[in-house]
Length: 89
Image (cartoon, rainbow, N blue to C red; front, side):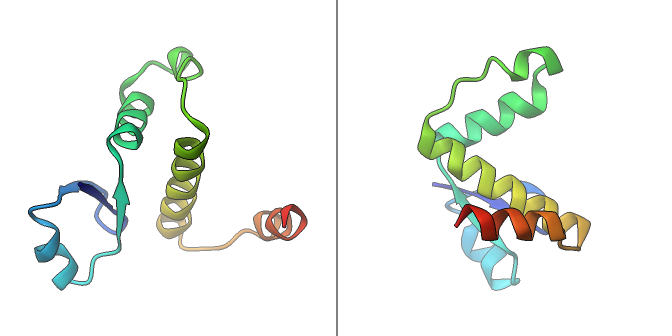
């Protein structure tokens, strides 16, 4: 089991998670396939990123993780994103 730290962007193993949680870090659990996708996106040339094949569930998790990360890093909300969510529901 592994976790992604939203505040201090890094991957934490299951053995070390207790230490980080006690410090109040915002942790999100990630699966091995989600970790693979994240690494593929980060380390691949731009033209190869579109060749990534990912399962529907993993795509939803990747989307939620990246959205949460970006909103936290940018420290703001977007009205258009809020509107999209209201229309999508």
